[in-house]
Amino acid sequence: MSKLKAILFDMDGVIVDTEPLHQKAYHRMFGEVGIQVSNELYRSFTGQSTLNICKQLCDRYELAQAPEELVDIKRKYFKLIFTKDDDLQLLDGVLSLIQDYKANGLTLIVASSASMPNINRVFDRFDLNRYFSGKLSGADLKESKPHPEIFIKAAQAANANKNECVVIEDSTNGIKAAHAAGIFCVGYDSKHSTGQDYSLANIVANDYEQIRYNQLMRHFI
Image 1: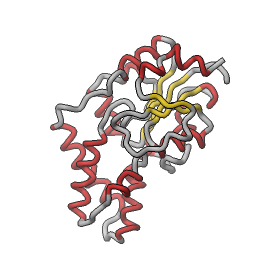
Image 2: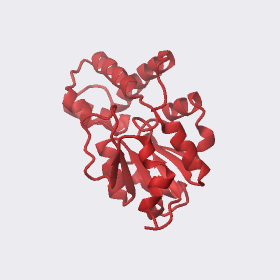
Image 3: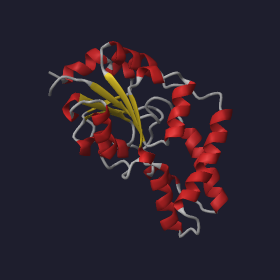
Image 4: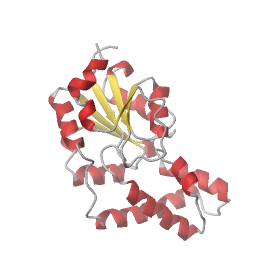
């Protein structure tokens, strides 16, 4: 491997645990459009964009609404919940990790399936913009994770080759996307990441102390 230049972060489940908020918002949307979604089906959506999920729901349940209408309903509920949830915090150790990478000269890019408004809400709330050189939303791209498009574009945004990057992901779909992009992937197996498959990750960590700059550099020449 060559020199490490950039870290490509997923957001939900890696930087902040907004999944409980998304789950509440999705289930309120499910109730509004009159569908029941099993826990198994819901878990399979982890890491995908909202639009891609809503397209699948429209097809599966033969809904009269367009996928874009479901997206708007879900985002309406998420925005309402986000503004009222005072318990939302950064994941343990992630701010120190971000600061460690930045202090060692790495370029940081967020590559999330979340919409750009939601990415900006999180980044503004926790003052993260100063650490990151770029933000990519899967909602703005043609393809959704597990397709590698978002990580290919994130590497380009970092002005780095794919073998100079590391992806940090917590979801099956995100790890598949990093693997398909040919980028070294850290699978972050936290208490918030249930039922995910880490078999395609290059390494798996359950604590951010395990992947600080000096530890991560051992995997690079």
